[in-house]
Length: 638
Figure 1 (tube, rainbow, N blue to C red):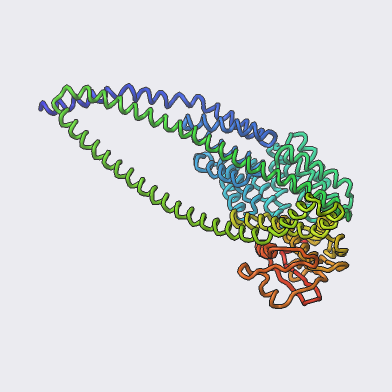
Figure 2 (spheres, one colour; figure 1 turned 180 degrees about the vertical axis):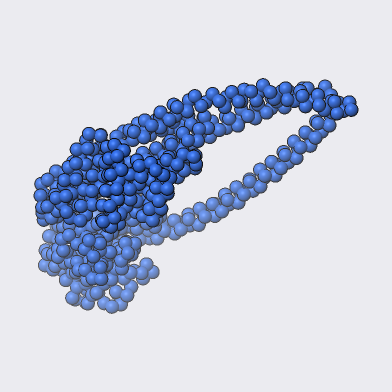
């Protein structure tokens, strides 16, 4: 009986020791609800301004997410992730947008279907921009399900469906969904969404070449975009104006609106709109047969595109860093909460121990507690040792992989040194000898001038060899990267003629550009430049004085065949069999003594195959050679 009474007394003391912390915790749980409104206010602000001021909206949403995490406010966290995803979508960072939008779905409560509808609709729109139309339509179905009877949400889903079917070129469906959305948005008084829908209508009629209707809807969309300060929509209306006036043959207006679209897109950081504006500008110049201006515009866009690529890489690093900073803050708050609970538990345990120590049962409690503690420590130590063992195995595997990679790089280095030592020593030695003989007075300035004319093609060949070695070594060490775009072979032929104008004049060779203007291949522009540069350089090398070199294109089986034809000395069948293999490649001297390594043709073969084609050759001794390769044709011409 005494023992039973003692146990009841200990339980009473135990409850007393927990009473005060429990009361404090209940009070803490109730007080944050008063600040939920602050999180909602920040989320509402970010949602309203992200199309006009995306960077400011990003900062606001980051603050909202931190506060929501501190309060453990699930709806606030879900809305913050949803708004962050929308911000990155507006700046064309679609993969990052997907990450945040999917994160939103994990936090948004099931009893908030309208916010779930917003998240699925944003996912559908982002998947459409990534051209994953099945996923886009599936998410839009979910968005409509969660929208229920809310006409505003229904209108937004219909709008995004119109966008998807416009991309799929199903224009009747696209127009039908636009009309549904317009009707509902007018009932809801959503002026911002109505402006976007007029932009949708302009795009749909533009694709159907109904330029009069497209202009009318685009005028309305432009006016409304200015009124509601939607600069992203305004940039796309400028692009649609440029494309429409191209279709109407009003090229001056097309050029004006394309330049407006470029300027505004650069200002607000919408890369997709800027790319479309440049494409429209180049197309205008080509339609006017102003190929030099088209080439100049392409070069200008190439420079800007390289800059944008670098900026995008830096921006991506910054975005990743922002995510980790945000995640670190949230993790830190979680750890603080865990530590607070641990400290609270420790305090309660100490209170219990202080009270229990007065009783005889404390000895048994200490023994049991000690046994349990050592058991947990042993288990933790065992887990720690297993984790360390796994880490050591992973490090061993990594070291083995690095060792194999280093061996490959070392083999490549030896191969490059052998080529450089054998094929680049002679031109450098010749140039050094001329300089020494001139310094010692054995040669006059006139003789040096004549020698320089003769050695110039050899030096040019050495320069191209070095460029090929660097390009080839880089591709072997770093791996192949390919950026596909529409490339006009005729314009590239114009550029090649300017590149080799001196070499052509020295040997009095006529360069004939028979590539058809406007026939564009779908390939990597830099790769195609390297290929043509090497093939035309080889043609000059093996063509006698007063010969000719022809660049031509033909279309066969929905592919573009590019030919480089020379009237040079040609090759035997045995030489052609060895031409494209690393183990048997060789190099002959040119008609003026030009040297080479043979690496250029191997590089051309790799780059052509990387772009989906195959490099071939036809040749007869004394009758010249034809190097030709196939590339995918742009769908418009196919």
